[in-house]
Image (cartoon, rainbow, N blue to C red; front, side):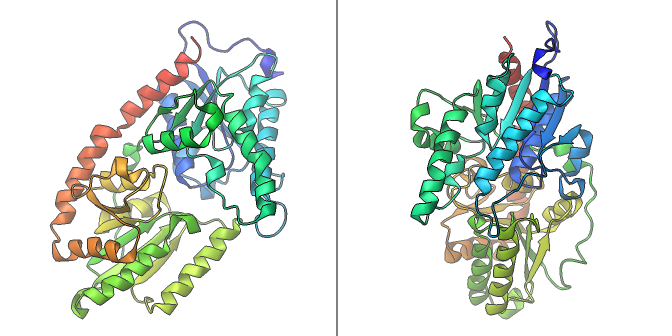
Amino acid sequence: MAEERRPPGGPGAAPSVLFLHPDLGVGGAERLVLDAALALQARGCRVSLWTAHYDPGHCFAESRELPVRCAGDWLPRSLGWGGRGAALCAYMRMVFLALYVLFLADEEFDVVVCDQVSACIPVFKLARRPKKVLFYCHFPDLLLTRRDSLLKRLYRAPINWLEEYTTGLADRILVNSRFTASVFKDTFKSLSHIDPDVLYPSLNVAAFDSVIPDKLDDLVPAGKKFLFLSINRYERKKNLALALEALVQLRSRLPSQDWERVHLIVAGGYDERVLENVEHYQELQRLVQQADLGQSVTFLRSFSDRQKISLLHGCTCVLYTPSHEHFGIVPLEAMYMRCPVVAVNSGGPLESVVHSVTGFLCEPDPVHFSEAIEKFIHEPSLKATMGQAGRARVKEKFSPEAFTEQLYQYVTKLLV
């Protein structure tokens, strides 16, 4: 059994780190996990990444640079049609994954890094040789689901308790922003004695620097000068409709010759296995038809890294629409590509976007968003000045070097 082997790292040796993640897709959490694993690997750690589901064709390309192994994908993702019981199934999948790693996998490791689902932590703490666990809290899961009915509240009550209890078993807890740290303290009352450390996500800038952007002729109709871009998963909480509604407001504010040169690309992570992705994509399509925006909007699903970089390079600015987003990696990606950001003035963007310097922070309504968008049409030079300021900010505050060193120190201190 893995827990009975000798610790693989000797005195002074870089630790062996095992990452555990529920589903290795294309979201912000997956981006951070990959960046963290690659950072520790570059720092000399032996790294392995375990997940319940991994499709190389529906994941960031950097995943191929890591040893990724799967277990438990045969377990259900939900209990029946409509995605019901997804949280319970995610807990079961992660607990099974942890048990598999401990008792069936040929793995030796010093530290476990897990995120999103804390239910697996007790498995590692109750082993014959308890493992050190670092838990990265992107945002409390109990705040990410609505409780519209008594049945849903009864279903969530034990899950919420389990999340709070098992999170507290981690040896160290990291969060992605000061905003998330404050929410963590307000939400997990029994963990008020814990002060989570803030580790901001960073960018794998080498991946951005190494790509020569493609032309966007296949995605953008001819004659479009002002290209606005939304990047987010096709989920209702991302408020993608705000970008479309802002476009409607913008149309009423512009002369026809300017409006005809405006185009919006709604690019987002899309998984056919996720019912909400399918439903929300259809909802947004209907909204475009009802608003007569068909000639001004392009939908792009599950785009490649190369397409994303090309879009960021060619667009006028990025529209980032989620409210109370715990951090959000898209604003960093945009700013590094010298692309200004129009974001909602809450959550993580308050810590990444500097208002009127690297973009604009707005109230989450179509009028304020359209006013910010309009500035780039009347003052085209804003893209260059704000874009340059954005790149400088990412290099200063969110560099891969700072992220790597901070994470490495957190991991190694667990073994002292």
